[in-house]
Image (tube, rainbow, N blue to C red):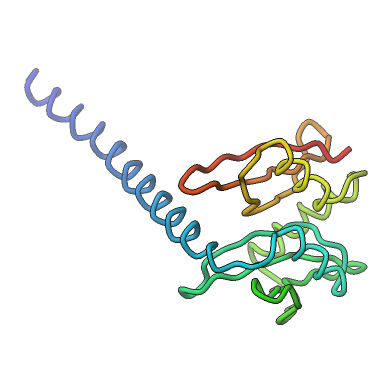
Length: 171
């Protein structure tokens, strides 16, 4: 009976540990892929934020690998409407803008717009401050959120293979 209980305990522990290890390897692989792709990016995320203002107020931004290609995605808000603006990472020009009308993207955009409605600082200012405080790092994403009722931007940075996320106050 003891052996069965021990075996069962081991199996339960293994069921929780292995998927977490796989998830970590997956995140590590995504980070490595993105860090490698970022070598081709000629513009900073901050410049992408500036370019996207033609489509509305930036409410978040991130570099990502989509379908094997690097892209700079900026969510914007104009009135009550949200858009995903793709900024060309080599020229800094808006490549396309698509409305966000449903799903997880709309949920995220609404939450981000709530945070930015309370913000006194721009995402560009928060990202620039994070770079100033972390020499040699490049901004990969800037995501606003409300924490304890205050707007904060989580700024993800990379330098080579080193990744970090810092919080910058927006109020």
